[in-house]
Length: 328
Image (tube, rainbow, N blue to C red; front, side, top):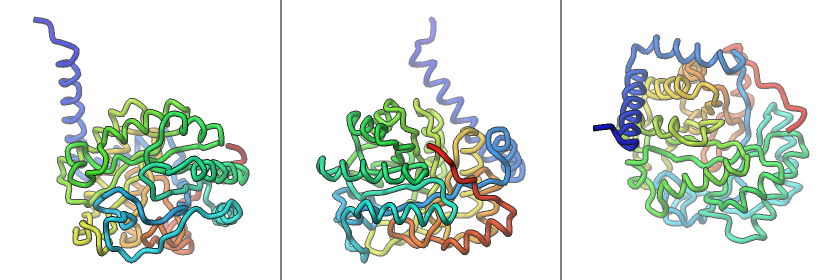
């Protein structure tokens, strides 16, 4: 009896899962060496892209993401504000560029853009960032195909929409939307010709099996992410995940290294959680293939190492910020 296409697909998925598992569990030094070897085939050695993330609309989000202090469902002590002016965004972008950032990302605490006026204002922000000769990235929640096309026309470089965790664990983190909703937005983004930025968060109570499933899901995505943000949960009082323990540094490095091996062309962005990471942990993350960080005092609502601290670290490690781009 001939195997069906469905059974062949399942077999291929199982094989990939076994390969990812074997890669992750190999001796640590071997894994980091394999990851760095893969990294150097596709990326300049000792170079890190600096990015800046601006919180363009804070708080009052209708979603119930268990990790997020911006959810209106949780009692958290964060500042709330609406969209800033274009002049404010220009000033922030100019400051970020002066500090070495080549990508300016803007995040709005929305389930989806609430109305056309707000969305049009974001289009204006994208145009401002492009005028400053920086890569423009936004994360606005769920968007449709028409909105993705409009963002592309405005000059958007990338759209961030994380899957957050393994599909099997996703319902334990968020109930107000499904991971299929996430995939639908990502399809719209890719079809419009916008780079896909998609990663997740470690330390939300998931098991190692969930983390390996998360990696496999990213690898198997039809539209391979151009960049993969790897966040460590920053527990915030008032959220359901306020008491989660920190991620083990070696497990973080193993995760980054495994992503690098299976996604050698993607930028891996070491994102939230760096404030509590030692220099040694961050150095290992760079060795394992991370080649982008977010700079500045804040990462949306949580604290982040300041620019001076990052400059000191990069200098100590002999890492060079990616050169500013001259066109997008």
